[in-house]
Length: 451
Ligand SMILES: Cc1cc2nc3c(=O)[nH]c(=O)nc-3n(C[C@H](O)[C@H](O)[C@H](O)COP(=O)(O)OP(=O)(O)OC[C@H]3O[C@@H](n4cnc5c(N)ncnc54)[C@H](O)[C@@H]3O)c2cc1C
Ligand code: SF4
Image (cartoon, rainbow, N blue to C red; front, side):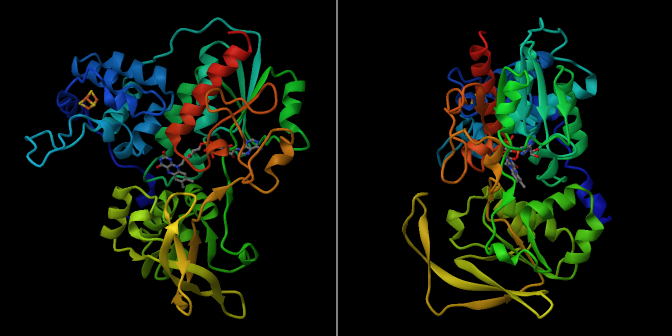
């Protein structure tokens, strides 16, 4: 199989029989703990109950009416710590009866139902709402922007999404690796949103002094800011010119652009080190592992238990043969005269007292520095707001990390008429929390504009 093929398509989902088999295991809990576990209120207990009663269109309707990105969430949500974590089908006892030992596969059922709607041509929103005169601008077409835009379009507002990049989708298109989430799938979901009447203006960054407030002057009655976090944090900002050093943002975007040969030429037969312990680091590691490297190392300054990545991602990486270099803090890069990367200088750490995040802080062990020979290093140590991000919303209050301060119950910012949500408010989070923020802000915008 060529490398391009390895990246082309995500794995197949459940079929109808498998989805019904899984729904039949559901205990139809009256208190529906799974539904409480969904940040976007996708209501798994309701759609699983409908599927169990063979009301398939009703089940699809429940998902799409509550979460316009129900397909994306079905594929990408870390369900093991959301809805499925709460599922009562896991009987928490050592003597678990047969079939009560694992949660209902809620994410997989959700994905099946949405794909089934696309395959059968079932449309949830076939009636057009009464049009309202107000126009709303959404800045950024990631999950937060898409969710807010869809909710407002369903209410009849005319919504324009401004997107800096050539195509809509944010991280869904330019971040997550394609074998986990492919474009064919996303285009269907995007189409559901376009059919609601949302207008997209791509290659249209909002910029310049007071760009966001200018939208209000240009005839938009409200603005929702959802630009996400697109600046990669770096170990050494002055190291950018090193040949062999990549940020996770650039590396993953190259794969999403289909530049497999270019990336493969850098990785095949080489020693690759990925710095970071979160899900983005896992995408970098697992994709590099598919490109026939000599070795792949994961370098993380805390221990295994503190790693923010999902447990199934960590297990997959171990099964793939990734070497985990834990309790090691990268301190510098080693290069030759022509700035070609030769190694990663590391210092060993030990865990001290908990820091502000509640996790035990890594402390450097004096005299423990050593060099890991590496040809390629990918930094996946967090995404942040670009340095100049606040230039285009200078009056919107932000934190010291340049995250926008917004009311969690409404998405309202310090500027009247400007709302915000998604990663630019929360810091790096999830698709489903971005969807939730879009819904919250849409509700508040509706109230702001007089219902
Ligand atoms: C590699 C990677 C893998 C991930 N995997 C998962 C996963 O498996 N599951 C999960 O739940 N979450 C995952 N996440 C996190 C999740 O994707 C994000 O939390 C989510 O996309 C945030 O949505 P958002 O709408 O706030 O921003 P984004 O998705 O970042 O979208 C913001 C959009 O705004 C645009 N924009 C920025 N500035 C401007 C401007 N000035 N004018 C116009 N447009 C602008 C950007 O180009 C972008 O398209 C992952 C993140 C990354 C980086
Ligand atoms: S918690 Fe689990 S068993 Fe109960 S309704 Fe939800 S999916 Fe079904």
